[in-house]
Image (cartoon, rainbow, N blue to C red; front, side, top):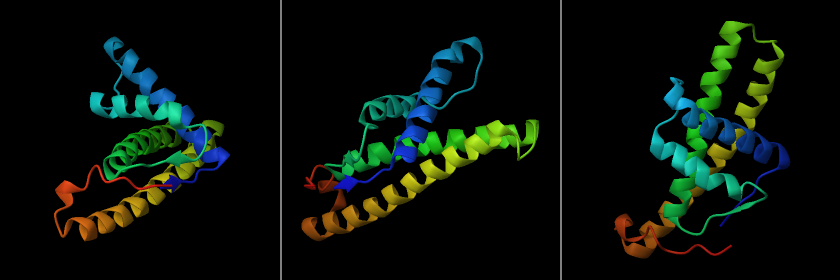
Length: 139
């Protein structure tokens, strides 16, 4: 299956993903960052953010969804901080708002894709979804 993404969505995910990874690297200096598993999934996602994303299996969809969820949660947290620190019209808050919106849209489409994939797996496996994580979904 193909997850279609526009330029703004890819830019928002890539920029915020790099911020998540950078924050994790700076964690030893006392900064707070996402859990290590989430950061690892974000790192694996970054090279794929060059165009539409091919999702081959339900397990792949879940990995990509987890990475995008980490990015969305980080953006939401940073947006809240900027609004509180300055105001909603501050340039950084507005930029984060749009990045959050673009990333949240991708997360929503991933959720819809996951629901569809799970339904197909359920049909194929006769109600044993644990058997379907590696079933291939061609483009």
